[in-house]
Every structure is written in structure tokens, then in C-alpha cells.
Length: 228
Image 1 (cartoon, one colour):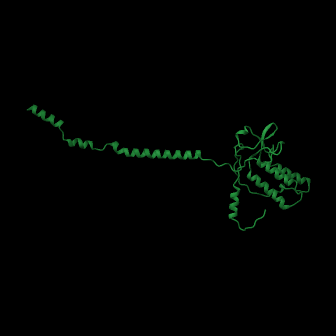
Image 2 (tube, one colour):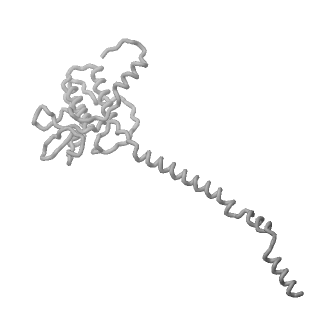
């Protein structure tokens, strides 16, 4: 009888109800529950990385605007913008009569001119967008535009010998405007002569769109008449 009992127990162990295995197989595992969360998290992180990379490359490849009234090749330093109130400058124009007054005006204009009158040496000019250079003092040189402009304005004023308040105002105002703009384009050799010097032709200036300014001002006009 003992052998029959053993045989029955052995059969019971190996011939279990199949439902037991089905229930165990269908029981959800922890990995099955976490899998959607992990996949979603990875997809979100990947999206953020792609977004940041896109922004980075967009900034890296974007063409930066040229510095307004700056030097095209980066040969002249960048200077901060400042807010300046245009004020009266009595010494900007003389009384057109006394030598003392004319000398005081000349010294006033000289205070806006650096030593060397704004001429600088530039090496390796073939690498840059520049007009033909001025060759003086054994060096390849260029003139910074704003100081050339001031020189020309003073030259015109210095031969204006008659007293006229409005004309004096014009010279003063134009000087303030030139100082405000501070055009640092580099100007090269005057093509009309072999003598070292510049007339400003051939230089590349970074300018505001004057046609655009004209069109905008015209569209905002108050009257249709105009005069020079």
C-alpha cells in the first residue's frame, strides 16, 4: 500500500492543474509596468537634447550683422554706444576777427583729434576688404574715417572768414554729428596722386540704409515742399 501512496503523491506533483501555470504566466511583471515610463522618459530627454542642439547650431551659423559705422574687417576696436546730448560749444567757432579767438577755436578742434591724426598701420592687407593703402613713413597705412571727416569740416570752416551766426551753428552741429557717428571705416590712398594721402574714395563703410530712411521720412511728411 505504501508504494501505491507514493505513486499517487508523485503523480500529484507532476500532474498539477494546468490553470496553475496559466495564472502564473499571465501575472504582470514589474518590468512590464515600468517599460512605458522608461521609454517615454528617454523620448522626452532625446527631444530636449535635439531642441537644444538645434538652437545652438542656429545661433552658431547665424550671420551676425555688421557693426554699424564700424570697420568691416575688425581692424578697429569695438566701442560701446553712449547717449549724448548735443549742447552749445562756443569755442567750436571763432569770432572771425581776433587771432586769439581763432587760435582758441583751432585748439578746441585739435582736442578732438588724436596724435597721428587717425592714421594707423595695417599689415597683411591682402587678407582684408580694403582700398589701396597709403604708403608713408615706410609703412602701409590707412586713415580712420571720422578724423578725416573732422579735418575736412574744419578746413572748410577755417576759410570762412565772415561772421554769420547760422553758419557757425552749422559747423558746430555737423561736428557734433560726426563725433556722434564715429565712423571707423579705414580709408586708403588717394588714386589721383602718388603723394601719400587719402580722399576717402574706395573705402567700404557700414552705413544705415539711406534709401530706407528717405522712404520712411517721405511717408511721414507733413507737407509736399522741400529745399536743400
